[in-house]
Each structure stands twice: as C-alpha cells, then as structure tokens.
Length: 371
Image 1 (cartoon, rainbow, N blue to C red):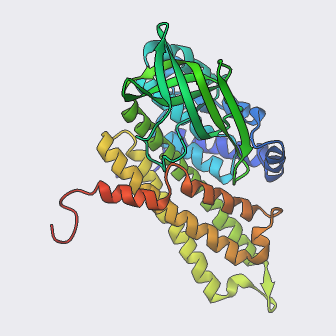
Image 2: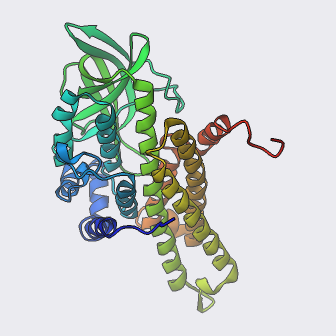
Image 3: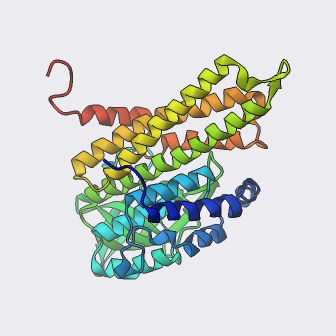
C-alpha cells in the first residue's frame, strides 16, 4: 500500500506551513491570547488560502477534497498551535454536506467555503460525560418552523461564531439544527480555555432554528468522528514540534561542560518520545483513512486512534516539560503552551479512558485469546 502523499497534498502542506511560519508566529499567538483567544483576521487568512472549502464540494464553491487533505492541514496548524477553530469548519461543512437538504447546503456551504461564515458544533451539555445520546435541549415545531431551548457548554469560539450546528430532541429522537448566533433567544458567555483559545456557553430560549436532519444520532456521531480525526492530526503536529524543540534544547543546554543531549538517560527518553510520536502519527493516518468507512467500522477505528493519541499526547507533553526543567512550565517559553494544548486535546471529544471503554464495548465476539 502506498502511503506517500500526492504532489497536490504536499503543495497544500507547504502552503499552510509557510503561513504558520511567517504569519502566525509565537508573538502573534500571544497577542491573540491576550485579546481573548480568537482573531477573525487570522481565520480570514486561512480563508484566503481556500482552506474552509476543503470539505465543500466544487459545486458549492469549495475544493472538494477529503480526509487526507484535512489531516495534512490540521497537522500544520498543530505545529503552530493555531487558536482559531479550523477543525470546526471541517466538522460542520462535512456534516452539512453529508446530511443537509438542498436548501441548507445552498444557503450555508458557499458561505463556509468563502470564509464568510464561521459555523461550529455546539453539542456538549453538563452531565453528558462525552455521551452523544445524552441531550436535554428540546426542539418544538412552531408556525411551520422549529424553536430550540436548552444550554450548550464549551462551544468553540461560541461568542464569536456566526452559526451553530446544534443537536436537540425533536419528537423523541435526536435531530440536528442550524442556529444563527444573532437569532432571538440566543445568549452567550465567553471565556478562555486551558490552551488560550476561546469557548462559550450558549443558552437558547425558544430560538428559531433550521432543520438539517432528523437522523441526528448518526449525523452527530459522524461529526464527532471528523472532530476526533482533526484532533489526532492536530496533536501529531503539536507533538512533532514539541519533540523538535526539546531536541534543540538538549543540544544547547550544557551541564558539566557538555550538552545534556550527550547524557544517555536523556537520549533514551528522547527516543521514547519519538516512538510515541510515530505511534500517534500512524494511528492518525488510520483515523483519517477510516472516516469514509461504514459507521460501525469508523466508530471503532476512531476510538482506537483516540486511545493511542491520548497516551502519546500525555507522554510527550510530560517528558518535554521534564527534560526542560523549570523553564518548561513558564508562560514565556513555548513548550508550556505545547503542553497545555496537548492536555486539552487529550480530553477533546472524549478522553483516553472514555475511548478505552468505547474500544472495549465495540470489540468483536471473536476478540481475545479464547475465541
């Protein structure tokens, strides 16, 4: 099997890497964090590269690309620990394109592709504990349309996004809806998150909404799986840069008159970090390649990937801090920000323990040595 990237994919990677290196350095990121954790201008620069249209069909004004291209982009954004929630654009455009009716696609996909509308997934609720079938937000029909009431928590850039994709219970089953932030009954409370990005709690009170699909459970699971694949790829980029920065530090920091990279014990720890990075990279590839598989196969694959990525993120982040010593936890040094990003990604869309349970629940009857 050929795992080499195509020429177009390499050009895409190069374009995003150049933007990260030249247009999104550490000082700009620090300024965005101080300003609240989201910069519409930075998202607009991603739109100038055509990235929001990655999962949007050419007929709807997008690039019509797929999961591998999404993985390539997310890896490079991870290297720059970019704060703007580009993964949310891949989630919502993918779900609208796969499950939305013609009117919803026509209304929203061209706007998403052009970067004119930032649409994010608002699905988390208190007490759900990563369960996708736990939803208290209610949808009722009124005057030929729909109204939603409920609260969604930790919505990425929730007080800055233009529109939300919201799961709600409609006539006893889960459905997905579009809700504009400027609609009546919408209130938001924004705050900073662990990694410096922005999130918000969104309250809906008889808020007008547009139905995407009544097959909400399948659509939400697909959305979260796209999100997991994005998190895996982003984490690979973060870890890749973390390992490189740590190796550079070991080669420049001296103790007893020699670089500490010459100490065998530290070299072994660097080797272990590299091994965890490559394990994570292979499982990230696996996750992206399984996004178009059948629902059961896709769900099993994404849970497996998140388990390995969670273990790798925790190991690489902790070892990087340990190998840097005290400077590794200071706000002025970039490794502390990589560590915070990895800590947050490990818990996004289900932490390692949650997905270990998912893997266990989805094991085939033939699994095990006694089969």
